[in-house]
Length: 185
Image 1 (cartoon, rainbow, N blue to C red):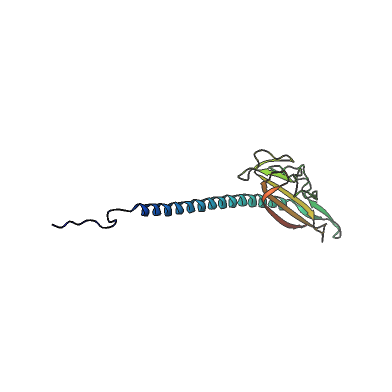
Image 2 (cartoon, one colour):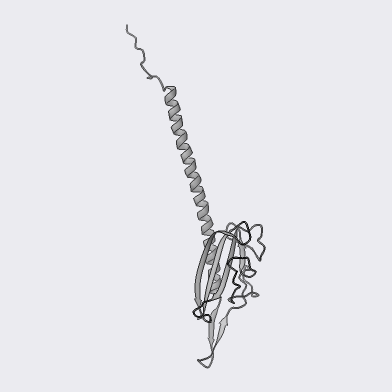
C-alpha cells in the first residue's frame, strides 16, 4: 500500500499568501474610499455652483423684466422715459419702494448694500435682505445697475453676483457673475 503525502500547499493557503491577498484588498478598499471622497466633494461643488447659477439667472431675469423704455409724444423729436425707478427687487416678492433701474452705488457687487443684496438658503430660497446676513443664509446675491459708457441714456449694464457667504460680509466663495446689456425699447 502506498500512501500519498500532500506536497507543498495543496490543502490551503500559506500564511504569506493570505497576508499578500489581505494587503491587496486593503489597498483597493483605500483607493475606492479616496475615489468616493473625491466624487462626493465634486458633487457638492457642482450642487453649489448650480444653485448659485440658478439664483443669478433668476435675479437677472427680474432686472431684465423691469420696464426700460420711452413713451412717444405728439412730437417725434420728443420722447419721455417710461422706466421702472421704484421696484425693490431685494424683497420677495418685489415691492414698489426701491430704486428699480436707477444707477446703483459703485460698490454693490463687493459689499452688502441695502436694496442691492438679498440672501438665500442652501436650496436657493429667499431668507432676507439688508446689510446684516441672516443666520440661515448660505448664499449672498448682489446686483448692479450702471449706464453703459457708450450710450448712458439708452443702454444699461446689469450685473449679478451670487456666491456662498465667506468669512467676512464682503467675501463670496465660488461666485457666479452674470452680465447683460439692456437697451431702451
